[in-house]
Length: 245
Image (cartoon, rainbow, N blue to C red; front, side):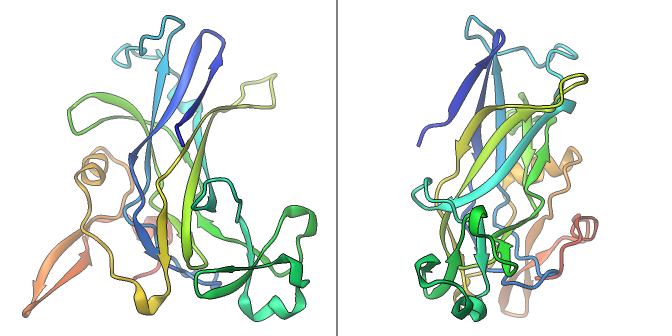
């Protein structure tokens, strides 16, 4: 599905996926367990004037980046079916059979807010909102980026993330509207026994980290004859409250 942009005043806002999620290990229903999506999704905002030309981000203050916010939500791989709320498979016997859905090898309850039981949990956990940063891409070009290094999914399956952009309101206005959306490519969440492991950090993750974005970096080291992916000592895991893999 193509990104959706909206005209707001004299400007149009567009979201694009700069780094697609690939996979992760399911984090289950523990409150402190974190199994971040790998690689971390990264979204870019493009702002165009009424004539269709991109705004020149080299002009200070041309876009108030401090008001830019992107929120992430989770859908099934079709990008249409929401699956934001799930219940622990151990409790599905207490849920009406019509609300139980089979995804992958697990049985879970996919619920809407109108029938939210006390046992429901959010399927997508972690920092689901990101503020914008004015940063350089791999070609040295300025862009407005939103990084999501602390997203985890509780249950196995194949999913898509929907990213929605808004501008935070300024007084006296107290509401904001969605100005652009974009869907990620489908990615897979594995149970622990089938998870193939984390990948090396991408060039884009490293580039944004060098500019101050708190993205955990992984590098490949050799331990005996086996190669392992280990966390860089300079990563931001502790600052984000994420447990060890």
